Image (cartoon, rainbow, N blue to C red):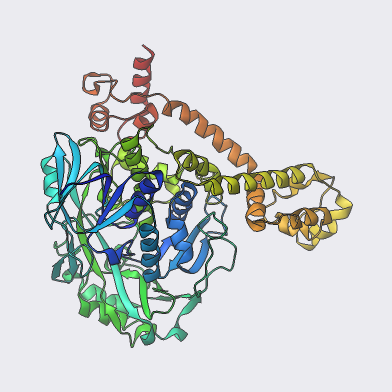
Length: 624
């Protein structure tokens, strides 16, 4: 039998699900192959979506017409907007989710997406025709053929689990590893290496003394991940809880550190710097007598809890002994211990900006196979890979996002330009234009792009235009409405704000850090009437106007900076130079530029080891 598709997606994690649904919604015939149809979009580690910079990625996925934001909102059991004490560039949405309902919601979407089909099996081999991929072979011996293939294998390629001295083959606990693919790709010329990640112990909530912990409730605000107004949180909202490790628990961990696979040579893979294991914490921060622990519910009704901050590869006995020395866990019962996992990944500098590989045509990589960590980073890559695989099948221009357009653009540019020397995790500090890349304006940045692709639907464009129109009206009102000192000074003094010496426009008052539109509406009746006239998405529109008024100068300045760099992004240099023959370049620059073959002058300037002088040399040569 012959099975033909436009696109085959291997792996149904967060990258695979976004890739498959995006391509299918754009019109491609897609086959999604997974080892277990009951583990679609499994939250392998913590049952949460978003967080600092990651939340911005989820909003971008939603703005483009992806699914992660919708699924996260529908399965949320807690929502928080992190960093509200800082500027809006740092605000980051995060949800705690029901792990089981997350899977069920994703599967429902996949099963009801036209053009999208599933197959339960393990892919063991790619089918090549010269330097072009044409399909896959599975463990059952079935061959599937396609115009393009997207690999989103997660931690399953030669996955090896460590719990103390115990080693188990697997991509997740109790789930088998995938073998054969790494070896085939390495033989085709791909550079591969090993990475390590880990997950904490799972705890029975009935065995926890919550009276010895601090409760952390969610926010009761209008915020969600999705821009669609009909996507709401409907599940029971639950609290997280905080406590600390103790000196006694640290002593147990230190006494058994030689048994840790991280320190006895058992683990060879590269571990994450920004999400370290508890044993790494006590070694790196030896002077600290305690570390924060967050107990997070895994669902709306379950007693299973995730202990954030206690990721470990130590033995079951050591983990349990150390936990029992934390007062809240003195009678703890666990469902399963924490463990570390090693897996294969591929150097992402072997990818094009579309996430197609440079060595094999029509083959795309997305997710942890590229050396990243995190559901959100994986989903963002999956979306871009799915879009570009569809374009490859049906024609059109490659779809990429610049660094001033999206965190997803920053993520992919970092991967293909700089490579990785540890599991890559997104932070706001990685984005040089983070004032432009706020979580509140992802729809303004990306929905038109998603609509032009055929991915975002008309409803999203209409919602965007309505929001923009109402926000513009509110800003115009604030810029033209005059405030008189004798009318407003008593109010300003009552909120400990400096009184006015002369009249100003309302927008000028709103630039003060502690003043916003809602606050001013309590003292200015005309403004109050203006706000009350907004019927739909009132809070979202007011917040958008507030941010644009208050940070107008910063936003304009950053746009000017971005425009200057964009000029360099428009200077294409791919395949225009034989870098090895340009002796006026530094030796390191010749090597790095030859290896990466950057698309533009701007990308060349971001390659580690390429100096401003090297860029000047290239610009001079281009001038000639």
